[in-house]
Length: 331
Image (cartoon, rainbow, N blue to C red; front, top):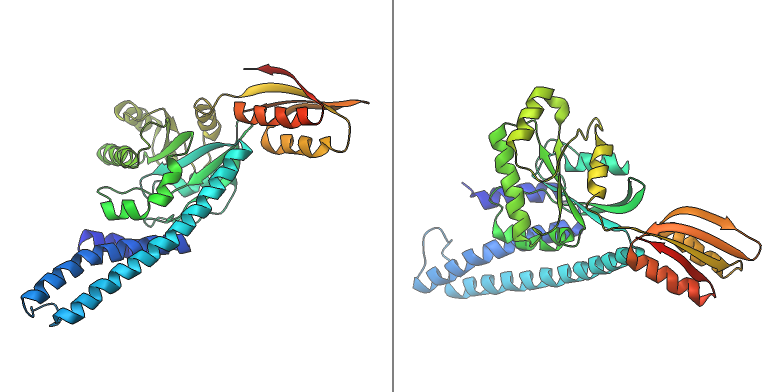
């Protein structure tokens, strides 16, 4: 006999593939075991108890301290992973890309939608928790460059220890500009409502409830048009868009909805002197913005682009340092 928490841990352990996911699962396992170790210590002090292998006081104390040391070591390793993740996040922010987090109940089709947007090959199957670590890829949403992150799937009554253990993974959602929530709309209406409520509650637990949400009602290829219309009326999902990630239906409509919640773009024009020092700046503009026009003249180079206000200001300072100028900015 095992309890629900141990069952979830076993599934997580089976699906874990990255070092970070394995460390997070081990941390949750040891933290859970620590509470049991405390009980063993208490019972050992009362005398040998059936079911605890006749552990004496000395052996139980050693066992308890060993668990605490292992928990400390794993937390230190996860801190290093978190620092590396923070560096990557800061680097992405400097690039000026918008951030989209892909969330949803486990087995709702998140990784399939991730592959549809990125053209990648993230693992997908019908088993629970296929994704236990984040994956981030650069995509284009209606011509705008953005970063899409696939996160671990949610589950009803997810134990608090697991939420804490996977917080470094889930916190990617907190820094996103918009959350793309995936629901399996082919299920019964009661199941859809329950899973939607679970997802919204989990987002609230990790302090991500204030971020705009676009709901992808996935797997519409498995139901009729009439059933879809009925479920869309009955489900109170934020900003719903019916799609099929597998068939790649309505992805353009989903992109259009996502763009509505991304940070507003500015259109700017700059003039740079036509010298060798200007080419790295122009290359950076092409990498970090949506370039609308670029013309090379005899004495100068003019570039018109769209980007976020922060990136526009950064480019302005780089252009001015070369003797160029920001010609115009349109909101």
